[in-house]
Image (cartoon, rainbow, N blue to C red; front, top):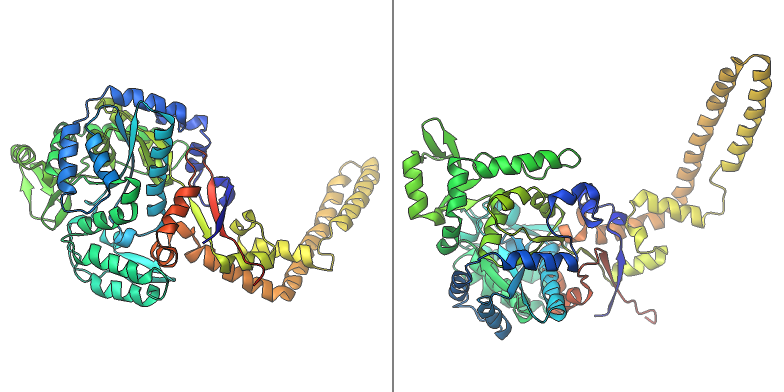
Length: 536
């Protein structure tokens, strides 16, 4: 495989929110919502702040050693786990739910970004050590969001009647999905080994979180990536004070609601906190806790608590309380000695609502880094781009705009009436001057006549372009094929496609390719183009 990389500005893709672009550009309007600038200066301030916080590193290492006890991992991971006990070792973290077979390409990209940042900082700072971490959001119960992948344009879904936290679900019924994938990808160079890996990770695991743990470790263990499952009683005990406040005083909700209100004055608020931001999680149940006049209720169940009963339940079983998006970040930063959090645009958006929450509980707020984005242009799409003579930035325009530019460049006919319209404007300017000299009120009549004449001419221009475009049916079809290859379901490739087809074709080299071309702090969208063999 031979790919070259081209970096373009995010705003040129027309695919990111105003808030995401403004954060990338460090717009002044967002300055009060975060703590550290996303650069090396921000890294140093994040280290200073984190160094003053007493992370329970012993518990962290204990839990990780237990979670990795049955995992065949690299020596680099083992060393990183033990080094987390040292006070000068910090984590670079990204987080995601246990999507089926990693879900979308950006799952891969954000993990690689964390690895690349950790490696870059290890080269920069000899007095510290940095460890990349994938924090698994295994308590998420939105099965419809996590139970499928898109493969060659088709949605493959894991059908299960299980409920509750997806990470706790048993991977039963995945045999047929894996067989379907094998039928599609088994013919490629690395297809059979990939299918064997899926069978090993998913069919031999007791839960989806264990399966995801094994699969991610297989892909990234050689890089030293640590996978952590926060669904653990020892970790939850570190959040007792926060959980108590959330249940009984609603302090977190008040803090985040005020920040969300301020952010919403210019941007869309990604998260609106509930009065209580905890779920009750037990066995195959994960439902919201709501306050009633006479106590508390687990939503959609018959489970009720008095305040005293709920206090006792939290004290005896903190593992039964699961934070939603408002508290998840605080939980993460409490248990990890973290200095950088890497997330997508929507993740950065909701983290910007959390600064006051972190300040209240005196937990260091991490440096927020928007994850890298990629577009992979393989040879088939590259050949179409070459035939159409399109540059990298051109492909982000819509189909009509691309065709319009091709028609204007290739046509032998004049498609604009710009010169003629300018000549008419000069004529009407002269008439306006003559009529105005007689009676100034006549100028309005001249202007109306001018508008009445020019409007049909502008419409005629559009009709001329449409008529000429009909001569370019071949190019229209090529553009449609190109857009379907690069922007499936009319969206960014990374938000639809899964890593499996790329891994089947390229093996571990695909992960290495993403690592090689991942920016660290450069804030650029990366287009990877497969080199074309023009001798064929």
